[in-house]
Image (cartoon, rainbow, N blue to C red; front, side, top):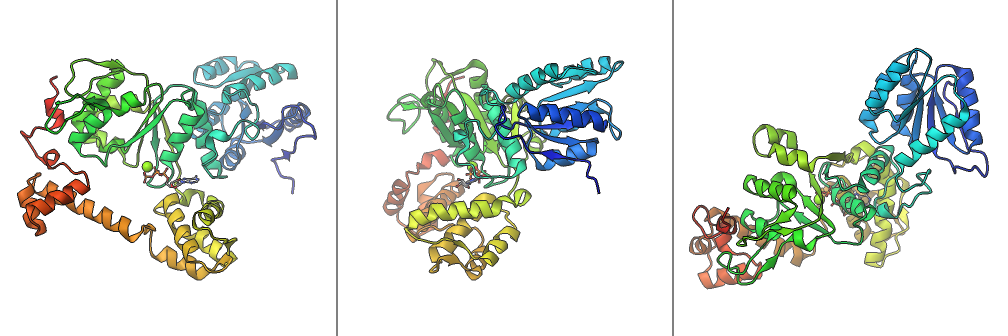
Length: 476
Ligand SMILES: Nc1ncnc2c1ncn2[C@@H]1O[C@H](COP(=O)(O)OP(=O)(O)OP(=O)(O)O)[C@@H](O)[C@H]1O
Ligand SMILES: [Mg+2]
């Protein structure tokens, strides 16, 4: 059977080193001619005769640019463009139009189509437009994704097409100063991507400062972000430089932004609007120049709907949104990641585990990964730590999979973590009243204070209304 899609390898020594183009036209003669010319210019060309074929190809492969006829048998080229833009917003599309469809084409460019050409056209014009389109898609100036500088994303291990799409978009927006909201389930690599974007940006040499908005008590968060003056509130014995100031010239990563309290959302919005921060207790604002990346695993639209997240702040943070696929959605990455983690862990544990037994790898590839890459990392770590053979056997993988995402913490680390959480819960329960908290814990006050000190916990920060806490000291 003749297949309608032909994939042509580039000729040896091709000039453009294989940028990959998708060419869509139902005129098979023109299609053959075009792909011949493009291949002769060194491009790698995949062809499709219908919109459906094109979309099927786009779902599994990575292209640098699309050339498409406006009239396709199964769909209008513009409708196809809309579909492409939804799934691949950074992919340049050039439309080929016949006489009489020029107004459509002009409208298309206003809707974001990169460019158009009217048939008949000469191949020089097409080649020029393609070269420009590819340059736009690769702001570093490389026409080939594989050949362009990949160091920025070295730590992100993946060969899934869905990840590649996110990485292409990330690379594209990294060059700008646009605020980016990174979404994705827990453990999908949001922080890793944020760091990579920073590395790919012009701020790479300046600091990258990350803060987890969900892990810091509300009253402390403001002073952590914006700093405080000496004496700004009880316990502020020294002035403190906030993260925004420390990150000046660089990038601030606001992790778990969905957990930021509403009162602080207002203040953050003001900082972003005025490009200046005012430390708690200070009347002077300091100008700052930072790029904001934020991340959340929460449904922020739902938080907007029930008033838990400010709409104006949301739009400011979400100029560009990147969503990382879950590991279950890119299962093809499981073996690659598992072997990568094994390699890293061998070094950490001084082991010489060579790999996984085939059944063990299969078990990993077919397992469900609600905890995503982090969970896979933990499973590999347990299996590697316990393995006594060069190949990790199925039984060890099965055992690690059963003990779901338990981190390989040492006893001391686990105890420390438990103790801290326990103390925080007690202080929350008693509104920061140490006597009550000590009584509940069945410890005397002195002993309890010592425990709090060991974990650097300040009871006054857990007090409710009327307490001398950071956010209330700042005079608006
Ligand atoms: N593609 C990847 N290649 C290599 N390591 C990865 C990849 N994705 C994630 N990891 C690793 O998995 C762990 C979790 O990643 P990260 O902390 O970036 O996820 P996250 O989305 O921020 O998770 P959470 O929502 O729980 O904070 C990290 O140790 C990270 O290095
Ligand atoms: Mg994270």
